[in-house]
Length: 428
Image (cartoon, rainbow, N blue to C red; front, side, top):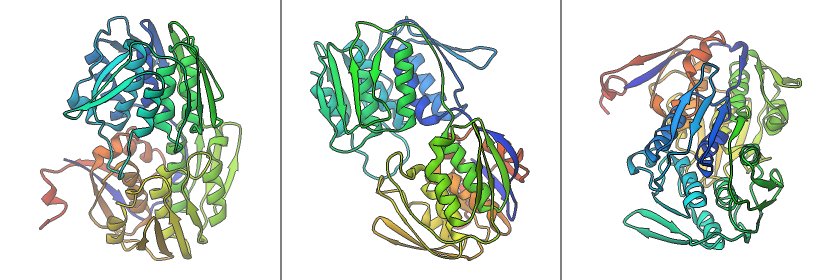
């Protein structure tokens, strides 16, 4: 197993360019199945979730290659199957986007329930509601979702809860349906706008993304397209929070600052200096930070994906802070591990009460999910001693070559191999 050794009491310093958005890319690649032509996708992050999606595309019959310029070329002409392999689908949550894409192309899909990080109940009832409204039948047989439609017809769909996954899946299924589809109470995330831009580049007619009402006029077929994935606001936010938590100074480049407004606001609230430019943000940490309350909400609220990193920052702020998690029930799994490092945190329902201003100390910890793993890296950098972090495979799902990129910011962090978990957690 691989682990990260993180030297503590280090300040992030320098500049770094942000990669393409994971949460957009994992929907764009399945969306490519809606054409029988060729698509070129640039600025894809080199992460394991993308590798797994490519494996699924290839298993379905797509030909995938990467050009010298780092652009992924996908030839969809050979795709004949509408049944993604279970072993691959079970490895990541975003595999559910194959439901909408394959339903839109073949009017039929057979797919197991998706895998991914365990963040508590994440039902797909709103996805099913959308598919049913478009004219599909949905059955669950032995853990396999079987979705079929003689034809897909546009419909007016009101989502009971704001759901990024359901919004995108309905967009995919509706892109080549007959007539117009209207999605009300749609999610507004920038990644949804990016997916729509990709669909429109293929010839779809999607308008209204970024608002709570999206309209899709179905077209007969989609064609070739080129697309550049937007910058990853979660990765950018992670580096911003890490800079503030380590009391460092860094410039995060090639971003869309507007996407980072809620993070910028909270960093300023705790006393961090933040300066923004056209495509960059400069963060300078403060030696003395103030407490703050954070509530996660769908965009444009504070992102749930940055809740765990923000919690680490608040352990370093003087006073009592409260984080309320309003998106995922199971997103406090990192708390017990942070307590091993000396964090003083109490849980009460959906809220975490953080008594800040106490120094963290190194300890062997294990990432249980992607964003929790990022939080432990930040905690390791801010703590005294050397932290050994296991569960690196979770971090690799969403952060490209994380240790190399952090080294470019002047900190000492190494990836090492261990024979087994007992070397890190003796007696466990």
